[in-house]
Image 1 (tube, rainbow, N blue to C red):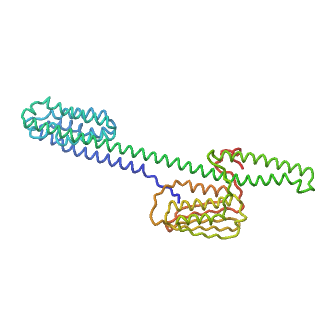
Image 2: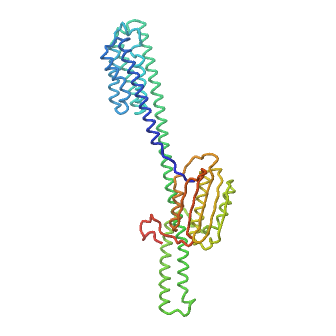
Length: 420
């Protein structure tokens, strides 16, 4: 049946964002806890400078989330300054100008900037970091004076640039995929919303058209009877004949206005329905058509009062059963369906129950099918309820008065436009 799906994407997005922030914060704290003692003990950087430059370097990925330009400036400044504060006698034995934790911070920074702010700013982060590291050997020639140290610095620069470039490409690809997925999700939501609106408009239009057709037929009968009364009843007086003529004229005017409204309700690409409207007697044929599609449907018709039901009630009963069967087939594939229609004065009682489906189907319902059925019942002064059954299936229960006359819908803009 047309069950509403719980809307959880927002909660999931919040959870994913929070998890990513927590993971990023944990990585930054861990790298900062390593880079300060490592820079002081292995590279000879004074402890205060290690604290300050390490904090600026490691805080840059977090700052890049909201202030990418400031993060670029601070990261470049710290990445440029940190290799210049080393002691050659100590640092020459370790990777330079990028230590291992500093390399990891660089890679993390490039990934965060590229993923959140696009490839252009990400490329700036990669290029500025590479330039800052290339200037270090120029400003500290004592660190590359020996062939071994020069080769080590060259290898360090190559590895750092290669790993950061790989992170740049990976982050760009992931960001592109996420953006495409988000656009597709928005497009699907927009399409689903438009489809729901279209279905609601079509259902309301069909209800209004059917009700107007029924009333138009009754108005035609009134007009014919009033126009021919003076010929069928010779003993009528002049005053009575005048009164009948006024009734006929009013009926003709009302019929013209009603047909004009019907013309508005029918779209240009929709031809008028000339076939007789379906009623309770057509429900067995409807059930047979569902059975031919391979669905197990049981039907029970009780009572002999259906003939006394007004045309509007006949149409509403048929449409409610039709929509309930359609929803059951769509949302509970493979489940058995039971239909029971009991006509006893003063009402028609409709029950449609489907068992729990053998396998859970993906739900695409928006609830407008149920709204349309409920509006049909309420327009006629009846009621309709729908909800999960105790056995895991779904129940639709409607009660329609046999002698109900169509009433104006609650959503009518004004009596002049929608009154019958």
